[in-house]
Length: 339
Image 1 (cartoon, rainbow, N blue to C red):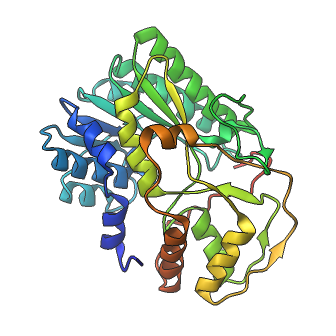
Image 2: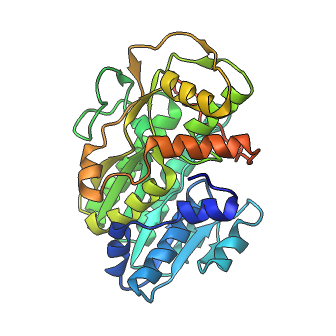
């Protein structure tokens, strides 16, 4: 079903799964969402608030971020999420955050790495160290990225969590460093954690499908060299993250968080049919792509609820209606790790 406006979209993105509700029902205290002002954070915080209400929980959902995008903080407060403005790169500010029963860690920097790699390394290594230090022993679910893997044979289903990592470029290297820091802190302080290697979350305002739809409707050619991608509805990714609170371990449980693999050509053509455009392509599909096998997460946290046809319908209808974009291209086609 198409989503007619922002209210309907946010409602769909924040629909909690039964497993998310069950995980939050077991919490005795507040849930802190660190880095809640980004692309996924507001809907995750909103989903957590709805899940706690469904579960009859009494603890708060506290969203922590700089909230540099106008209106985000006010909308969260209106929806029952408590907010705290904080620069999480300030160690003293992190040390002063309130206690929590569990933490979802969403802080990270990807874009702008090429221009300021030092900042990317600082955000992706120092900040998680500050958070792990402050919340010693507190269950934590932390977002990572599928970019920690090397390009994989496209004929396969991609690497599982048992396969070796091989980050390409400084962003991916710093993301793996974030994982290693959290792994160290987990072992040192006996902090139970789950690390989620995500790629790619999509919704009508952002993601691979929005990138492709924008190119299709503008009749710009689509590069097929990165010929395959995994996609998952952003709401399903957030629901899985909340459900993962029930599965934290020491050392951390590592899970690939994504949906099935799709051909970029097939996705673009499917969007073209919905947008009354014929996409044009350049290049040919390479033998490798950035992929992930999410069988373990699907088994443990449940399969995604939103299928690819629904995602395509929603994105195409949104773009056709002139719905706005977050203006943050994914650069999914990047093969050399430059962001």
